[in-house]
Image 1: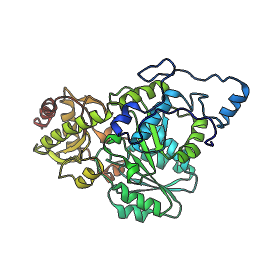
Image 2: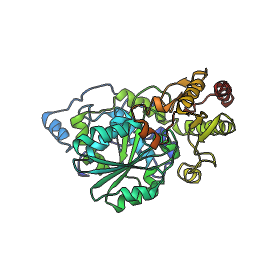
Image 3: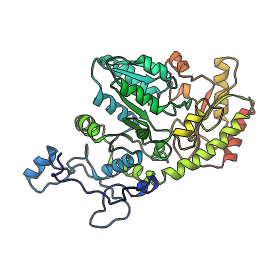
Image 4: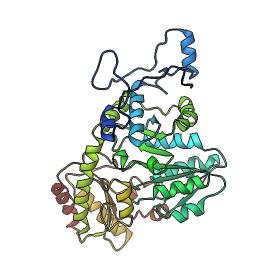
Amino acid sequence: MSDNNKKLPRVELPADARIDTIAVREGLPATPWGEHSEALFLTSSFVHPDAATAARRFANEEEAFVYSRFSNPTVTMMERRLAAMEGTEACIGTSSGMAAIMLLFMGLLKAGDHVVCSQSVFGSTIKLLQGEFGKFGVESSFVSQTDVAAWRAAMKPNTRLLLAETPSNPLTEVCDIAALAEVAHGGGALLAVDNCFCSPALQRPAKLGADLIIHSGTKYLDGQGRVIAGALCASEKLVNDKFVPVMRSAGMSLSPFNAWVVLKGLETLSIRMRAQSEKALALARWLEAQPQVATLYYPGLPSHPQHALAMRQQSGLGGAVVSFIVKGDTPEEARANAFAVIDATRVCSITTNVGDTKTTITHPASTSHGRLTEAQRLAAGITQGMIRVAVGLEDVEDLQADLARGLHSL
C-alpha cells in the first residue's frame, strides 16, 4: 500500500514514549463520541459508502475495516499496542497462542523446509511441528535450549526458521536470544521467540535480534485467566506479506471481545509482572531451603544455570514461574509425592494455565506435556517429580504454608 493511499489514523504519542505509557495509550484514536476507554466493536462486517470504495478496500488499495475475520478496530488497537510494547513494526492477533504458532508455520514454511527448534518448547508445539507439519514435508530438528553450538550444528541449507521459548516451560531454561539470532541470520533463516513467560514488560526479543515474537495472550497479557488469545509480532513486511494472506483464508481470528480484554490487560502488565516476579523470587528462595525439594528452577536465583543471562535479558527479574522436583527414589514414587503436594494445596488452583493473578499449580508430565512420550519429556528435563507453580498476587506466606502442607507430609 503506497503512502499516498488512505491510512487508518494513529494515536498521537511522543516519539520517545516509554513502554508504560504505550501500554495505556497506544491504539486507535477515539470515535467522535470521545470515549475514554477503548471502544469494543462487536460487528462481523463493515459498511462502505459505495461499490468502488468496497472494491478498493477488499483489494487492499485503501486501508479500512472490511470484515472482522481479518480486520476489526478493537483487534487493531490490541495489535498496535502490543507491537509498540515489543518494539516491532506490526502485530497480528490470533484466536489462541497455538493459533499464532500455526499461523507462523503456515506463513513461513513449505514442503522441504527445515526448522531448528528447542526441545524444551511447549508440548503442543512439538506435536504440531513433528506430527502435523511433518506429514506435509516440513523437517524439524530439536536441540538443547541453552547450547548455542547445538543450534549451529543443526543448521542445514534448507533451514528457514529457528524457534525458541525463553524462559522455557516448565524448566525456565533461558536461551541467549542475541546468539541465536546470529546463528539464524548467518544461515539465512529467521528467529522466532516465544515471549509468553516474560512478556514485553520484562523482555523485548526484537531488541536482541529476534525476527518474530510469539504470544499466548491467554497468559500474562490478559493476566486474569479470562480469555483465550494469541499474537505474532514482526515487521510490517512479514505480517502483511506472509501472515495476513493466510489469516484471510484460514481465519484463526482473534475475536473483538477477547482482543478488548487483552487490550485492557496490557494496561497493568508491567505492574503485575514486577509484583508477581517479586513474590515468585520470595517463594523460590523458601522452596530452595526445603529438604523435600531435590531441584529448583527459577531464573531469579543465582543457583539457576542461566541466572546472569536471565538478569541481562529480563530486566533484572526472574519472572513469575517457579518449578521444582520433589524427592523420590523411583519415577513412580516421585510422581506420587508430586501429586501429594499438589492435592494438599488449598490456596493454589490446580490448573495448567499461567499468568493469572491467582497462583496455579500443575504436574507438567501428566498435563501440559502429557501428550509427549516419556523419552521426549526426559529429553526436555521434565520428570515425574516435577511441579510447576505460576505465582499470582496472593500473600507469599500463604503460598508457603499451602505448599508446606504437602511437602512436610512426604
